[in-house]
Amino acid sequence: MSNRPRLGSLAVAGALSLLLSGGLSACSVSDEQLRPGVAAQVGDTEVPLETIDDAIDDACTFFSDQDQPGFPRSLARQQFVSVLIQRAAAGQALDDGGLALADTYDAAVGGLDEANATVPEEQRDAFVLLGEATSYIEAAATSLGEAAFAAEGDVPPDPAVLVDRGRSVISAWLDDNDVAINPVFRLTVDNGQVVAELDGTSVAVSDAATLGQLDPLTATEDQVATAAADLPESQLCGASDQG
Image 1 (cartoon, rainbow, N blue to C red):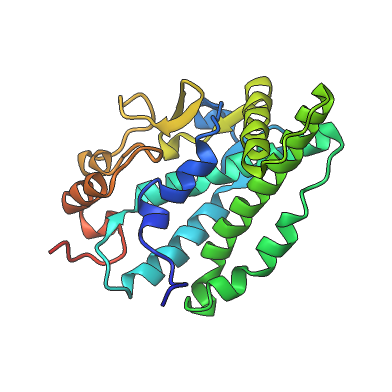
Image 2 (cartoon, rainbow, N blue to C red; image 1 turned 120 degrees about the horizontal axis):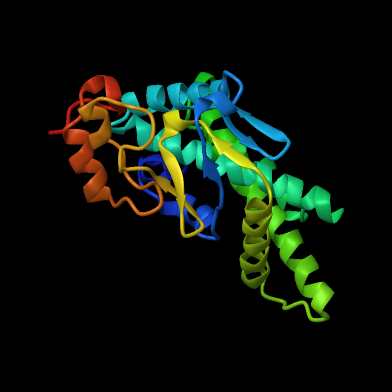
């Protein structure tokens, strides 16, 4: 049971916050600036809306069969698109620098099916998608960080230091390039972070949906549970019984 995907991996910042805490810069724009069916345009890379929707459908179907409380579907969608934005940026930053992914990527991705073996095969793609993106970002950050330090003449031996430096390079790439986020995700940029837009300036949603809009970087388990308790079942991912 140790390999079973946990609610926290989707509903609370948790591991995702480690990916995003390096700082994401982007701009939320009107949907007129995005082609239909696009969740985000990251430089030259499109993140398809279908990719996000399919992943969330699979993940929510899995969690609906688990003995776990439901959580806001909107939060899971925000986290998925945020991670895929950073993955796209990381890849283009590597290309710009003429760099390859660190060797850690192949080993990490090779173990994803085994790590998610308890998830039915027809629902596994969502968790593999998230795991692949996580592995890609970390491997890219390692390479980018190593190159940045090498340019200064001193590469530290600590992998965590390399990753932190690499995340700053990815953030700088996002600062210097165009990123458009579909307003349906209600994401905006504040102090270099992609956060939930809570002031009502994005697309109009129902009052119940607004209750489910949490900051995907900082939401705690208690905040997630409180928001979920106020949402109708149609806006929950996982079990509808909030106890």
